[in-house]
Length: 65
Image (cartoon, rainbow, N blue to C red; front, side, top):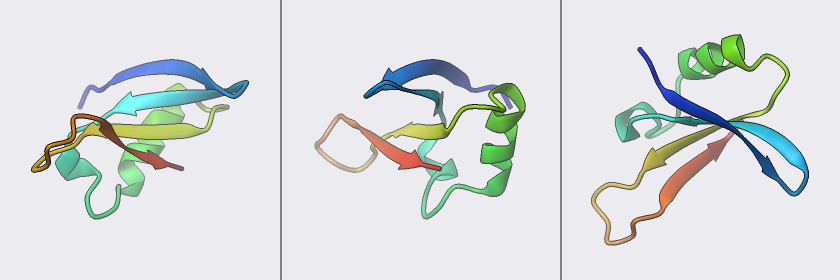
């Protein structure tokens, strides 16, 4: 499966941000998603980002690993 990803910097810390489907992050992301991201970004912390569903807010739900 292909995901969109970017390297971002938050407070001087580079992170690999990976956009995933909401059903892949609830109730908890699987180890497979983290392993896939670490294959492409082996030295960076991984942040999984997914759109919020079923709510009036439009911001992303963020999981840090």
